[in-house]
Length: 493
Image 1 (cartoon, rainbow, N blue to C red):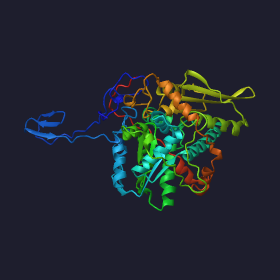
Image 2: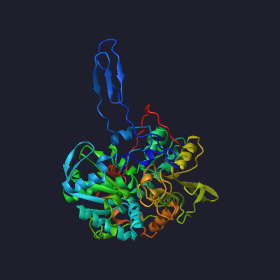
Image 3: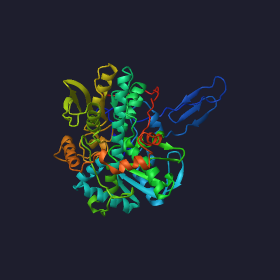
Image 4: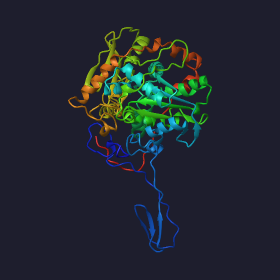
């Protein structure tokens, strides 16, 4: 990469981006030097010069860290792979080579086990890029990582199923609470798996919107808890000795992994140590073909009958949150076991809704809102008290996670940033490429969370039951309003 900032941080006329019109800056407080009364100080770009004493003092060069980006309110998720210095392909290769890891807190630990967790969206993106079947792409990725030094390569189906089960139950509880407290802000419940959306909500709408966001962790962070807690215990190593890498469709997952909420002072480690995207994997492969990597089966470290493999869920390629929760709520609240999932587009295909009627009365209204233009419209409706939704699946990228900002072969800028790095494919539009990924996604075997025996066993053996304090600690999180700074950046809609 020639620039250490993405195209979204340098260009101002993009279509569906919330983007500053300048590169990131970090304000520096310059302490007034102790000089004689009446001394004149000339401030320059690199420091200050005391004119009366002829003394020059240079300022320390400021580095923008990931923590600064999370705390900044001048822009929306402007940090990406290069800013997150400990979550780069270079850092990953270094850990493979040295088997040591220094985290964002400066703690260095020996690495005993390297675990790679694959989410389906980037695997499909790479499958399309290298003209492989999804199962073969997953197998070749497993072989590629193991050749580099990985000990385990896992799929994330169990984490995705746990998240859907928790989100279903959380919605049911919120719906029932709303019936008893009509003035409380339990509904609409908004999906929380997209870190770009969550970061925007924390920085822009703060305390108003945060009570509506689901507390259920994303699949990435749920998988992080599972790997650092259960898998580490089974391997008889400390959580800090497990280096956990996730393969994700967008750069914002790096932000999510680095949140302080997902760092344990007890174990001195994050749940996810490094996030690598499809684009970065393409760069790591270089001129080589993924199909040339040795094949290897995905691992199944959970015991009993093996069940590793890529899976999909009904609904969107972002995880199917709206569909699963809608069907669950229809059955649990209204006894509808065969509710129709027929969406209708509103403003555009990225803003659509589905309703359930009971005895001629509408009882449920769900929506899917992808892309920041639709998100902004949704939030404004909520602020005006015009929103009638009970649940909204919210994703920052138009077309959702299959069109994540770090997917390869997507022709148009899909997420908050990264669009300038994506290579177009001759003769194909962005929508056609997303449609191709959706077709690959629909071809995967379907996972039904309620039928996942491993998920049920984890609730019993690992989490001490569905409603235990441990389950809440491992599968839920919280959000925080970010105080506005005085740094003014142009935000173009």
